[in-house]
Length: 484
Image 1 (cartoon, one colour):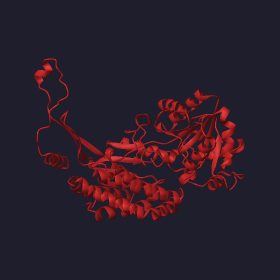
Image 2: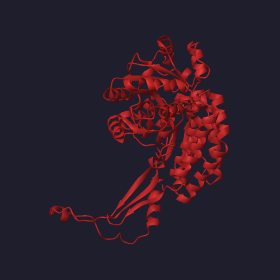
Image 3: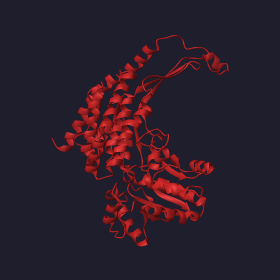
Image 4: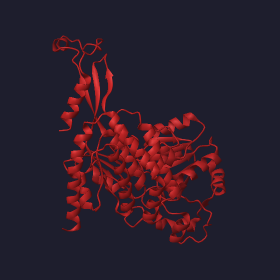
């Protein structure tokens, strides 16, 4: 059997086991699911550093200490956010309106994993799926296969040790395009959870299977005239350098009014940014994108020293934290206006605030629509005005965007899959969590008769009580019905 056929058969075998696991998970109560997620959280925290080291060694992307933080964020911070969340059984009961909401699992989930955040994505997706009662089968990026498989193994052992059935968490061992396509299109796959490049997300949405996919991030950061410039620049550079810029919510450009240019430029240099001259700008611009217009993987997650050496920039000091390039346009022919998952920032200087707003919208509409926008300001009205105008699902005020977007430095839901909404081609604008991975069954009692409707009276809210019944028995019947 050749590699492609072997990988397709593996998908079918894993789906058969996952389907059996789903029948068992569907009968579990909230306490049983919570026990499983608690065990996965503990295992993820225990192995966070080791898995981070494996990821950097295999992919060459990012920094071990930052990937350790991301692994702990996925294993611990996320777990603490979902620990008391109800995903199974009765979620809400409105006795006045005579309705009950019941949470049921969606079924087998296909989890697509990027090479930039491989181990943390596995921990994150495993936790939200198991909390929802869904089995998950991972399709790993080939360049991160070993660290992804090892993370899946850590999760699998912990989950099964806490009572999860065999087949609840699995990973393809022979990742091919054919295998991923089979996994996404198979009738037993109920949902695709896709994190990665635009082509992969498009394939997920084109598969015919319901999908939650997220597009590129390309967020601009506006430093307003009321901002503490030193603090704003510190936050932006801290954000951009975290894990060498591999979080999609990280800033891709800085935008300022002309009156702020001198102060911001001086502060960038003071804090270790290297501002390219015109010749260096042109030289690096030829290296950012590949001939087909996609991001050059050679810049992704690499140090400034590595990028400078590969691009032939000889004057960049070894202390430089980020490369900053003045830019004047957006779109084709302006490579700095695109997403750069590395230590490169575009720098736009506009005549006034209206021009700043137009530029930020233009950047997002070119690439990154629906994702993330950052603003540094002490004026709440300005923050609100920009929030209303920019096509972004996350508007972050006075915080590092990479960490604020995922909910580490803000009170947003902790997540490593950030929905971009319809404007960004995504089915959700949420920071994706367990409640995005369940279906909610509505039970509703009749509150009026046809004669009332014919008589022109729509009736009001029912003020009586739901008749006495065994709600637990009702829920169990619904769950059994949906799992067969």
